[in-house]
Amino acid sequence: MVLLIAAIPVLAMVGYRTLRDTTTGRRIDAQNDPKKTRYEANVLPTPVMLLVEMGTDNSLQGLTMLALGAGDTGGAVVFIPTGTVAPQADGTLATLSNTFGKGDFGGLEQATANLLKLSFDQVVVVTADQWQQFAAPVSPLSVDNPDRVAVSDARGRTTTVFPPGPLQLRADQIVTYMHARNQNESELAQLIRKQAVWSAWLSAIKASKSPGAVPGETKSGFGRYLLGLSKGAADITTLPVRAQAPGAINESYVTEPATVQALITRDVPLPTPAKMGDRVRVRLLSGTGPIGSPNTVAGEIVAAGGQITIIGNADRFDYTTTQIIYNGDQFAAAAQKLRDALGIGEVSSSPTPNDIEDVTVILGQDATARYGGNGG
Image (cartoon, rainbow, N blue to C red):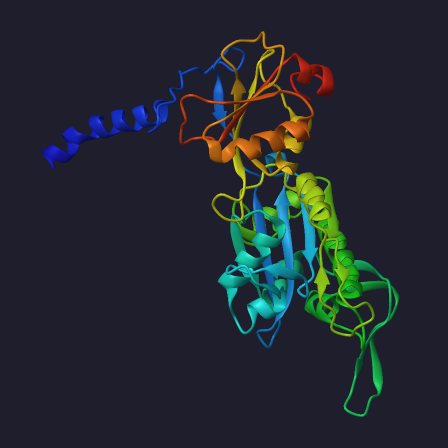
């Protein structure tokens, strides 16, 4: 015990030195004033959750990406058609529903991450009973149903379950309404109804004066996302896809990478990579004055495949030209891609590589001229 107590100061010093001096040599000066040169801070990624919706027969009924805005206020709700073709862990292609099969949650998570080119903080599985429990405090939900929802019996006779027009959905009806599929109806048409439910649900939570509008824990998990999304503007949309064989009953869908990337850049401004090495780690510094909120520059970097891990101020504030410095020849192409995306700057290599970031971007006066402020 004496030896353990004596070792505590040593461990603290080792940890401190590890933060200041990386294993390959870059030294970070301790600077706590964001107005001064050499100030740096770690960037917290955008919180992202994958919601996996299960049917009463344990079938995969839906996939939804939830992302929170700054300060857990507002964000995005993106419905992902389960028929979407996505890269598997082994590089092959399959629809998300086929990837899941009869219960491969790990494979489903990785394939969805590969599709969106980001990773999830959490994956939450929601059953029909849990949907009812979550929605009960603010039900019934007022929904404008876009089309008739009907079921067919063995003789082919159809019965209307939900007529078109205004509906008041009880908590025990919500799952049935969201997961129901008309005969020959596409999954995209079904997702329009799901969008109506989420819009009504978040509005009801926001309007409620009850502290229990979101039941259970609201500091973490699904409850945190529900409460946060209801506090501000939420972008509720479906992942842009197109059917491989238009008109087919059981469609499979494909995406356009550029369109998906534009959506992710908008809704998840600070993503983490789907798997190690997918995104180049970027240290973003201001070389013209104290760093502000370089949202435009950050968006360009993310869209070009970057992950901003550190933000701060350069060693001086008189840079005229933006510097894009890569740490190792393996990142030369990525640095050039960032330069092309930004439309400004000079690319060079660092004589002292490090293990914290792959590329350092120091914004100069050319960035101010192009993007405004200290980089937009």
